[in-house]
Length: 259
Ligand code: CAA
Image (cartoon, helix red, strand yellow):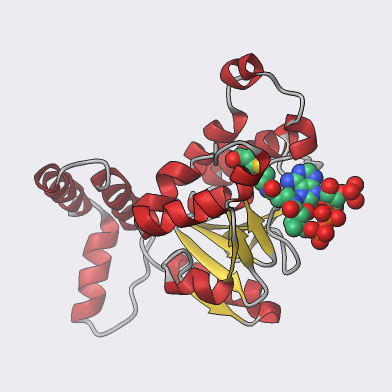
């Protein structure tokens, strides 16, 4: 499919989506949300693709939702226009394949919230992250008030949301907002390295492990443990489980088929 606001490539089983509106620091307008949702769904359908990377490249991840597009919206517009961002963000979060956000430069507002829908965040040393919506007289409406406290705890999340401050990659690492910080010029190499590591594993096990964590976070511990047990049992019906354990016994690398 042809896209105007994003670039989509497939490399060694990794689907790479690059936000591509550099003139406005990759601000996320309704077209980006629509195209991003379509691209993610397309890559999910492609059996060749085992892991996704979402990035804006080294210079800027995304400076938030498009303020110029939003500025004249009424409350009724916002309440009734179907929230394309929410649909796309939920699709990414619930995708059965692992998603890595590779963050260079600004990841602000909706950009930061987009990164929160990924399973893992890798930040370049030049990354600056934050939820500055409060400075615009609004609040983070792309999941920031919900996903951020679940990731880093309510206290730190409230500090970021109430102040609107930007934080550096190092601070983001310290508070658990990103998984690792890498030299800026190494951002894509590091993201691809991690993606390849994930891609070499069994696709069904990856998908169910992701589901266990995501769904478990919505449940009490006992229900989560029961859900985990069901997913664990299902994996014993896969060829990958037989292959993984046989490979261990035969002291060789497993060759997972995602079946
Ligand atoms: N929406 C629309 N356009 C944006 C934008 C945004 N979020 N962020 C940057 N741009 C545009 C600028 O208007 C500018 O365009 P022009 O050249 O046509 O004027 C261009 O990108 C370059 O930006 P700056 O000149 O401002 O670049 P800078 O280096 O001086 O500053 C910045 C960079 C600090 C990131 C600054 O651009 C900025 O503060 N951007 C807005 C950040 C923000 O508030 N994000 C939250 C948006 S609201 C949101 O995301 C809601 C939600 O919850 C989903």
